Image 1 (tube, rainbow, N blue to C red):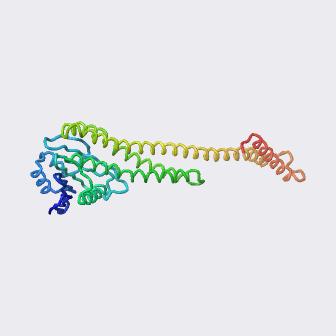
Image 2: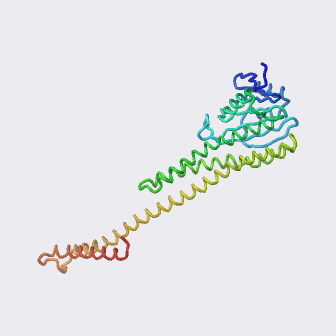
Image 3: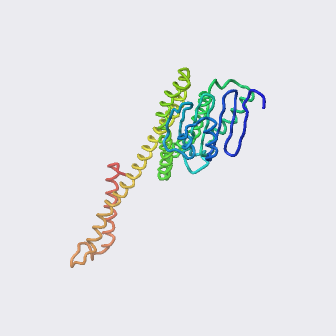
Length: 318
């Protein structure tokens, strides 16, 4: 196949290989032992690194292995994951003129990047760069930009909660909604927090591997990371404010209910006492036995209720 643009050399099972000028990109999903062995022989991958590619790794990290940098990152994917896991791992093996991405799920940003990368390169739009570090830069930037979709979902949910938080009868629904958003934000924080140390280590490793001129690109990756972190922090603050507002509304409504019940109990207690007194089985009870005694007692009880009502009104308790 002749031409300058990207050439899809092969796409066999879960391995896709692209080439643009002198840079090769190999994308692998859930590699088998045979596929890992072939990659190890073709790109001189350390056997210890090749062995780790067979299964996901829980801890993100950066390692230098002579002819390549081995980088592991996990990206949260609550709405765009194709498996039950909410974290998608991507392993990067970055050499001078090649980059290998190993993943264990369909990572939508990488899939979209491969299409854009292929089309733009075929049309010869711009130059990727002289080594694979520049290709990694574009990849990681695409992955971080994809997190904006997760953050936009959280933003939409917070805006919906903000409009409904003052509606009567939705306090319990708001508690559940706020708890759900809080869980998503917590998962985002937990997934992205290790990126800071990993990117910091990559900055040092890339300077030794690609030279000091790559430093600006490494710092740009940091910029993308901090932009996402700032958005998460802003949404976290909004969530805390909405939660405090909802808690205040719940407390106010509960206090109103308790106050109403207390007033009702305070009013009915003396009335109950009066009725109990006149219901006593004694030889003598005042008023009882006289003409219209029932209406006299009932009138007294109603007058006492009205007096309590006026008293509470003047005290602004009602």
